[in-house]
Length: 156
Image (cartoon, rainbow, N blue to C red; front, top):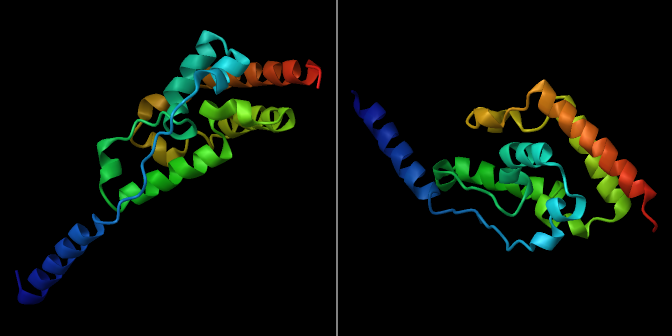
């Protein structure tokens, strides 16, 4: 191996080690079970299982942070994805949504899963058991439609 190649490798290793110092926040805020989607909408067991298997890591405050979420630059991507997902829809904080917002989120659950946008394809590369089957998508869509209809019937 020539001197320029060795120098480049040393620079790359030092740079890799240096970026490990920049640690993103990997938080799991406390969960008040009375405010979760499970408490608020009482999804049937099959829907709860799908949500647990395919949505919990990004769309709740109960993220299971895998080992690679400690290694930059992947850690930055994972923390950013979780932060954006929680901001968009947080199943742990479902009670904070106004009825109209909750109805829209329920509709988006069906839309995003139907078109294959959720779970994220990048997430599925490592978490293959999170992949939704066509039956899973039908189950989520039927449930989300029924939940929207129930919300619409509630007095304001």
